[in-house]
Every structure is written in C-alpha cells, then in structure tokens.
Amino acid sequence: MTKYTTFSSRCSLAVVGLLMRQMGIWDVVVKWVHIKQKTVRHAPLEKLLDAFINILAGGQGLNEVNTRVRSDRALQRAFGRARCADQSQVSRTLDCCVEDNVLQMRQVNKENYQAHGGGYRHDYEKQWQLLDVDTSGMPAGRQGEKVTRGYFSGKKGRRGRQLGRVLATLYEEVIVDRLYSGKIQLEKSFQELVEMAEDVLELGPSRRERTILRFDASAGTDKHINWALGRGYHLLTKVKNWKRVDKLTQSIEQWQDDPKIPERQFAWVPEPHNYVRPTRQLAVRRKDSKGIWKVRVLVTTLDDATLFWLARQPFRKEPSPEDIMYALTYAYDLRGGAVETSIKDSKQGLGITKRNKRNFHAQEMLVLLAQLARNLITWTRTEMARHVPSWQAFGSLRMVRDLFQISGEIELDDHGRILQVTLNRKHIYAAKFLAGIAPALSSNDLRLNLRQI
Image 1 (cartoon, rainbow, N blue to C red):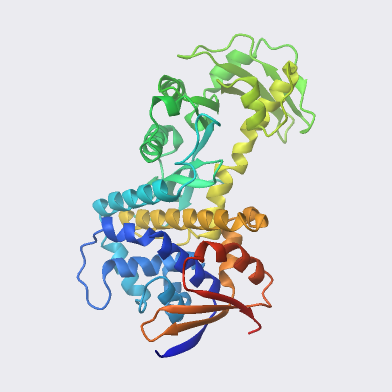
Image 2: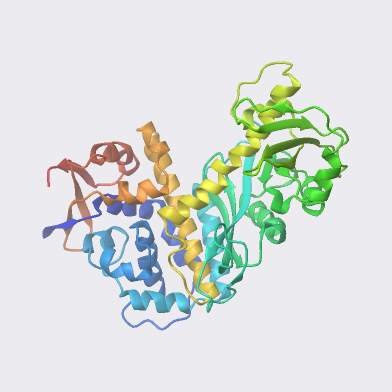
C-alpha cells in the first residue's frame, strides 16, 4: 500500500471532519437535500459541502473557498471530498436553491439535532428547559430579495433581513434559525419560531409545562404572552406597551435600589395586569444619559426558587421581597449573555453577515449551513470538555479562529484514507486539543501525534 504525507494549515479541522463523518452528520444532508442542478465535475451536494467546510475554516465569504479549502487536499479528504469545486461553482449551486431545498435543510438540522443535541435529550422532570427567543438584523445590499428597511442596531436607515433564533440556553445549541425580511421583527415572528422549536424538541403539553420562554419586549404584547401562557409555557419577558407600563407604575411610591447597578431601581407592581394565567410583575427603572427615568415592567410566572436558579444565585428559604426582585431582574438580564451572545458569536465566528446572496433561498441555505456548523462546534466542544474542562469556555469565534487552525501533517494511503494526523506541538493548543478529541475517535484506526513541524 502506497502512503504519502501532506502538510495542512488546518490539520485540527481535518480531525473534526473525521469526527463529523463518524457522527454521520453529512449523511443526513445526502438523505434529504436534492438540488436540481446538472452535475459536470462536482455534484450539487459536494459543492454544498465545500461551502460548509469553508464556514468551519473561517471563510468570511464564498470566494475564500479557493484559498481555505481548495488549496488544502488533506482537509478535503477528511470531510470526504476528493477535490474541491471553484468558488464560482459553489455560488451557482446556492443560487439554484429553491424553497423546497430550504425545507429539506431544515429537516436535516432537525434530524441531526435529535440525534446529537443535548437539548433534545433534556430531562424535564429533573430540571427546567430554558429557551431564549430573539431576532437580529442581517444587513445586506438593497438589491437582494426581501431586503428592506428595518431595525438594525446602530445603523439608522440601513437595509437588510432579520434572523430569528431559538436557543436551548442550557446547552448553547441552536434549535431554530429562520431568515425573514428586514421588516419582520420578533413581534411578527415569535409564535412561528416557538412552534418550529416545538417541532424539533417534540414539546408536548407536559414538556411545555417544564419549559421557560425568555424573550424581550418586542414580543411582550398581550397577544403573545397570552398565547404562550395558553400553551402551558412559563415565561420571563418585558411588557411592550409603554402606556400600559405608565398605568401600572404610576401608583408606585417606594423603589428599591439595585445594589449592583447604580441608578437602577425596582418595585412590585401594586395592581398587575390580568393575563390568562396569574403572573408577577416587577417595575424596573433606570436613568438615561439625560437623567430621565426610563421605566419597564417585567412579567413572569416563575416561583422564587426557579428565579434564583435562573439568576444563578443561591436560594435561601423565605427570601425577602427585595431579594426576589433582584433575582427576577438579574434572571432577565442574563438573556443578554445567552441568545444575544450566541447571535453575536455566529456573526463573528461563522461570518453569517459576510456571505450575502441576492436570492433569498440561497441566503437562507447559508444560514442553515451555519446553524449546522454552529451546533457541530458546540457538540465537538462538549465532547472535548469531558476530558479537558477548560474547552467549555471557548465560543465559536475562538474555536474557528484558534482551535481549527492548528497546522500539521496528514498521512494518507493511495485511496485517500487518512491514516495518521501529526499536529504541530509548538501550537499553544495542540496538546490539549488531542487530549480532548482523541477519546471520541478511539474506535477509529486513526493515529494522532504531536511533533515539531
């Protein structure tokens, strides 16, 4: 048997590719996705795989397929590719995607999540399931389909689309990613996103009763709150209607200072608004840059112990009203470190705002590929953290930028099968990477080594 060795600047990513093939993740894509495009040198799904590898390799645009994937034959082999298509061919394949392909890719993400996701195997009797729901702006050129003016943070007058996301917060896994036009904020997409999450997680009535929905004021209308409560969910949200807020808080006489954040105060709403189920409502006010109080009202169905758990604070029997107010507010504050951080992580680490396609379905296919990449990164990190706990602190950006860029040498046989991977031991993460990932590949004949290269 002939063997040959080749250098790879992303040797560690090649190992992740082998793990992905062992998990059978791309097999599900082959099973479900059927893009109607003639095959010349590369089949449509092969070119889709090239785009997927490019995302994991840190490519910010499709044009980087040529420099990050096509130039690295060993990396291609690790993901099951004999060679890589040109970036223009990959782009044309995405342009051929239609609505049916988007639905097929959603089924792929659902099936892969049910096979590998921690959130799907959640023990509802032991612990609450926490789902964070949000939307975020995806700026794009004005010629794209469904690119409209809308709300884009810090970019007045900007055009683009909106990304809706449901996050299984305890597991840092993306349950749903859905692309909308630029005008569709959470107020218009909330129920659809939650229903899509119900489908993926198979949330029947008993599971919904053990699930917390946390979302911001965009969906804090009577319509959405009553809908969620009517389906049995528990929730933590913020009231949207400013007139309602003014009415609920005008009779408050005494406010409690926040011990951690200056110029912020709390008070229970004396006469809460009636929803279809009983709730507790807390007024929170804070001074803006002009010294004017801005008041909001938080709404929750959660008991004291659950609020303290959600706020990551120790629970004491018979907590004071002030302690409960602090816990409720901090529990809501933490959504900024959950779904908002996860979207930011996808934008920075996976470049989801950098790859813009005029075709709306092509753009959503890229979003769904990035969702699959994001979850693969999470599952890889979780597996590695079982043996090296410090990996749990790494987000997508650090995984793609640092961990997947370890160089080394790859030995292959004449059939293109990878026999040995040797990482450059001078890389700061090389030894820890092998310690974390090697047990997951122990059933494989692959040999993993460290050597100065």
